Length: 386
Ligand SMILES: NC(=O)c1ccc[n+]([C@@H]2O[C@H](COP(=O)([O-])OP(=O)(O)OC[C@H]3O[C@@H](n4cnc5c(N)ncnc54)[C@H](OP(=O)(O)O)[C@@H]3O)[C@@H](O)[C@H]2O)c1
Image 1 (spheres, rainbow, N blue to C red):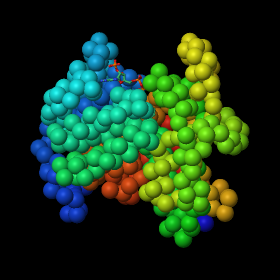
Image 2: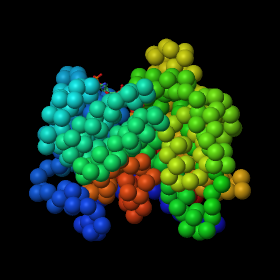
Image 3: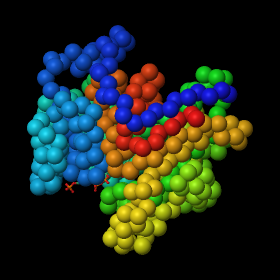
Image 4: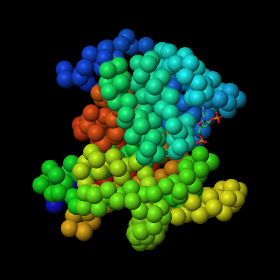
């Protein structure tokens, strides 16, 4: 297999809106695109948090014309975030557990970005339901397998309402799914059939993660890991199956362990390649120590310097063929990654229904390159298929 170079580096300029619909997209989508050119409004729920705040910031950099609404329960924090974003931004008081409040907040909004986690153990998809009832396009940064498939259960309702929605639209899961889809697509277009797909992640310190992400890691310790062996679903113990992976310069070899994250299941179901997800113990070890100031101190030394790396291996006959490398400060990169999905939906690329990032009805194959370029703006090094 030859080199299929997609090498994306920082600083691509903001792209113009996508071209007019091809005719195959449905009426609701065409109507959204032909709306008068008033300022598009994006509501970032959880915008007072790390992921939501960095998404709002990235959106304001990529599209300064957007009206960005910072949604959350804390007025003081929300107004402070909105003030930093500039004139078109404001705080909206909203609690995601209150359906009436949500529907009111979604009036006149062109896209809602749901970052108000944790998604683990959350039984209801209140934000998606409000998005469907108000006909508002939707994305979330969910990183929980059950929750992501629960949102998928609203596919027919979203389709009937003409609402485009993408679940697991952050960096990992999110951009990782799009990269996996690109690698598999590239391999298949050269007549190669991948035998196995593995996602490896390493985070130095906490990667700048907030308490919600740390809590998420803790919750994942209690979940069996779903992986796929020769096409069969298997259950494994969390943090088992150690592999020693070379993350390259600066990080080098690290042990990584199995963890239950949504891209393993969605990539297997959608791309049809057996998948596994492995990450280092670093973040959870720090959590177990449970001394937040210490974690922050470690971040000061390691987190900001070494940052966050992920590597995705596409194996064929047990040979690593392609990989991706992202080095970045997690919070910044997750903001640009989520903003890249937000813009793809706003620009009318997504068909009505609830999609995973690797599904072409969610992010069409021809829109992936632009999404990856935008996402790469939050990274210091972003290489694919080298
Ligand atoms: N897909 C990915 O790539 C990816 C990457 C990283 C993180 N994540 C996920 O992103 C989520 C957010 O992480 P984070 O680090 O940003 O957490 P965080 O800093 O704790 O932010 C969460 C925000 O949600 C708000 N919130 C919580 N419950 C709310 C409610 N009922 N109504 C309205 N707002 C509410 C909180 O604001 P108040 O409490 O002040 O209201 C807070 O500002 C987590 O679930 C994490 O697992 C996904």
